[in-house]
Length: 511
Ligand SMILES: [Ca+2]
Ligand SMILES: [Ca+2]
Ligand SMILES: [Ca+2]
Image (cartoon, rainbow, N blue to C red; front, side, top):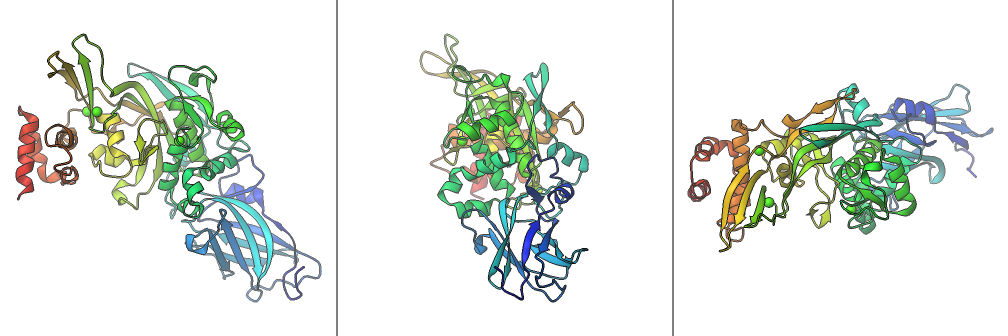
């Protein structure tokens, strides 16, 4: 019941199909408006007979968009904006013209390229008289230059956001085999389940306002997903199992993500997953939400259990393996594409995150996102979990035997066996694309020596000789590598490595 003198709206047409096709969301099977942020979409208001006419430049109204259970202006989860002559690219804005038939108004709306993603309601406000226009889902926009996930190549966007068919590499480095995977991110109902994953994450449960506001940031959402795809801690999507598959499905029998996500939404954690299943489901959810994502396989992948960046194989005198550290034939995770304003533009681009539950990070089974550039350069203080991922692709291996008198004797090792043939599906083709060089310098080159030294120093400094309690290890890793490049290479080839380096560092600290 609109008072005279205001627009009396019979219905609002969200122009779902035309908006979806211009926002690259037409592949979604859902009959709901799905748009990407930082880009215009148009809705049509149909006025009741006898309504006041819309006159451009004269008629005024405000639009209100709201997301989450506690929409707040301060959190950018509630935004009100009036009509302008034209929309702007940088913020929520709207303009309107009279439609061709006279009793319609065509309203063009632009969202902020930094808005939280999620389900929104759209309301029209005429001096406090509110009319609900409808709902829409807002996603990240790799086509928008102002968006943190902007990806300049159309062929890459087609692969990493719109691609539903994947190839996942497994096996050993000597015999790599690719298996097809159906990501299914556009299957009807999947987007809704992806939003549900965000809505049951513990950060949302404990502070919904902060969590919804945080959804503007793909770094935040990627980290949440790396926790939510495994069932540890919070009842996330998949239960990991490597030995006994009683009461569930062998991880090797899955061929796509859709069935897994639907089963989780219906009845909770799905039994069972292993690394490639966790990664493939994470890729589905990331692509559905609009974050460019790829599944990555690392052969000879280290699992460093004590964060010393070295894989120590301990044996007793009878040859029994006593190690906690391990090296997998292969391990699978995901890379997601985004800027890193928290770290600086040197770290923009691919970010590794790993949803397989291996080690806790900040008290939760999650890992990443860590910039590939930080992993390659050995910048291991960069958030999140760079040391763990560095070790997966570039840990040194040391073989030791414990003698009956308790003494440890080193008898072998390798600096080259961990992290080989890092693989993902090629863009637009069913071929293996080797991305090892994006994670590490070629084994044996000078750059590797520098990186290796960064972590070798860290290792000895924090664990073997001095001990972390006496000297904070960050003093070491924060040293600019370039300043010591030459000295490191010299020492590397000398004997008595650890003692000499420590001596050198101690001198430096007192300069
Ligand atoms: Ca979890
Ligand atoms: Ca270790
Ligand atoms: Ca190496």
